[in-house]
Length: 198
Image 1 (cartoon, rainbow, N blue to C red):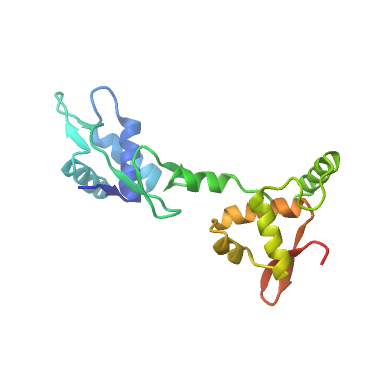
Image 2 (cartoon, rainbow, N blue to C red):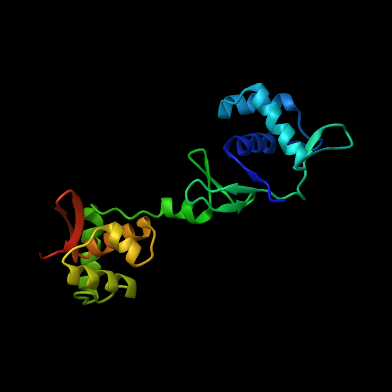
C-alpha cells in the first residue's frame, strides 16, 4: 500500500528527524517541536504518531523507544504540481513540500524589467555581431516568430501552445525582452508580448 503524507504528518516527521538520537526519540520532544514549529496540538501529534506507527514508519526499538524505520518508504504530494514524490526527494519551500522541478522553477526566475540584463545582453550581442534572432535557441526563435505572425500573444497562450510551464514561458519571454525583440503592451484587459518595434 502506498503511504502519502499530508502537510501536518510531514511536519511531525520533520520534528521526529530533528529529535531522533541513537536510542530513538521521546514523544515530549516531538510535541514541543511540533507546537513551536507547526502550531500543532498535543492530541494532533499523538494522533499522527499513532498513524505513522500503524503504517510502519515508526517502530519500537530494543530500548523501548520509538524510532524511524528507514526501510519503509512513503510519499509526499508536491504542493506545486500535485505529483506524488518519494519522501526522501522533496524540498521544503516556505513550509510546503515541493518536488525538485517546482523548487527549481521557483528559483530560476528571470526578471523582465532588468536594465542591467538589457544592457549586458545588448553588449554581448554587439560583441558577437548578432542581429535579429541570431544567437537565440530554437525555442526562442519559434516563440519570436509566432509572436511576429500573430502580432502579439499572452504568456498563457504561448505556454499552452509550446507546452511549457508558465514560469518557463516567462523566462523565455524575459530573454527576448532583454534582446529588445519583444515588449509588453496592454490590449483590452490583458498584457500581451508584442514585437519591440511595433
